[in-house]
Image (cartoon, rainbow, N blue to C red; front, side, top):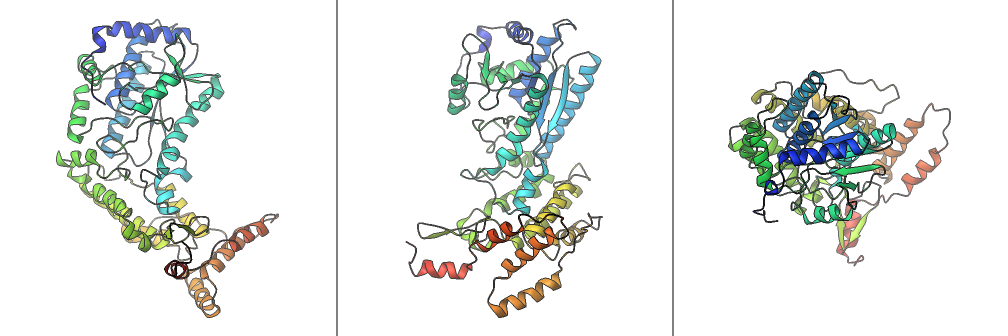
Amino acid sequence: MAESSYSIFESRTPEDIHQEIQQVYLENARPWVIGYSGGKDSTTALQLVWYALKELSPKERKYPVYVISSDTLVETPVIVSYITGTLDRLEVVARDENMPFHTDIVRPKITDTFWVNLIGKGYPAPYSKFRWCTDRMKIKPANKFILDKVAEYGEVIMVLGVRKGESTTRDQVLSMHSIKDSPLMRHTTLPNAFVYAPIVDFGLNDVWFYLLNNPSPWNNDNKELVTLYRNSNAQGECPLVVDETTPSCGNSRFGCWTCTVVTKDKSMEGFIDNGEDWMLPLLEYRDFLAETQDPANKPKIREHRRSKGQITIMNNKLIHGPYKLEFCKELLRKLLETQEKVRKEGPDPNIKLITDDELEEIRRIWRTERQDWDDAVPQIYADTVGKREWIVDDTTAFTASDKKLLSRICDENGVPVTLVAKLLDTERQMDGMSRRAGIQSRIDTIFHEDWRSEEEVRGSLDNSELQ
């Protein structure tokens, strides 16, 4: 949308905006939650709130203000460093100046992280029609924090650095959920949560004018933010996402370094072009993920069955499911190799592109749900990074030699080896339990999966039986 030449400061001064913020704060006896993403819009909103509350007396500043940032665990490292440094300084200054600000970083549950879903479960790299990452990695963690505060206080006000004119959909939502004669809006999905957007009428030039003419109260240098945008070719920031109407990240916005929703990551390319050469392995890995979306690659790297075991045919074409286990092993190996390159060439020799908890969860999923009897995760890690201690599995585990024996027996009898392996793994997981109610249901579900081979399915397609 075109940027208007009108400036908010033609009709309102910063002091006018401070007065509105103070009025909203004092008249609504609720804690505030400010979404901070490190970019220009959320920084402007946060600064305005800080300066407005600073003008109040200590007795009036009685409602807590929680400043939260979302860490998906795959954020661009340069941005993560900037955000964490900012929050640390803000926390210190708030304590020294008796300001009611508290900082927190929200992260997805281990079962919802990018690598657990992509490498562990085999979810294909996100794209516009299957953006599975946003809800799991951004919306749920932020909303959980908000709902926890609602449970504690009854109601909260969510402060967002959103502006009109950035998105037609967002403008419609802002209008739809506005409250008559109030600067507050209803939250689109969360009960007892309200939204306040203090820079909603700011233009892009207003944001930069404000930041360059008003120093950071927590001792940041706002000129560094300008440099960050310039070096990354970024036109926007990836905002704290609290609902599905928030614009997608990608293109030239700050966001996840793994983002494949767009064709090119101009932000990361910008950092590399401006001297951050150590990020090149990250861009290469991201481009490798993007290549998996090529239809020509799908038969080689993705299962012919969906995650629940069904086979889907649309327009006489086979719809592929998750990444094959062998390809997931390749993804993990390449990721750990990328991590080692970044450690050697980048500013942080201890950077973790994937956490230890994620590695353990991927190992569990492969072992219990994907019949990885080779126990490949520790082997891949040892080959690329080195040996480390792993959680000991107390249950009786099948081995690679067991898998070879089972494969031979199943081949001789014309039975899918994955079917029998899955049944054995199900039995193993229930072994020793005092109550085994549900084992029959789980076995029945496995038998009802479509166990036809890919060759059998393609044969029926070639014979035009499924038009």
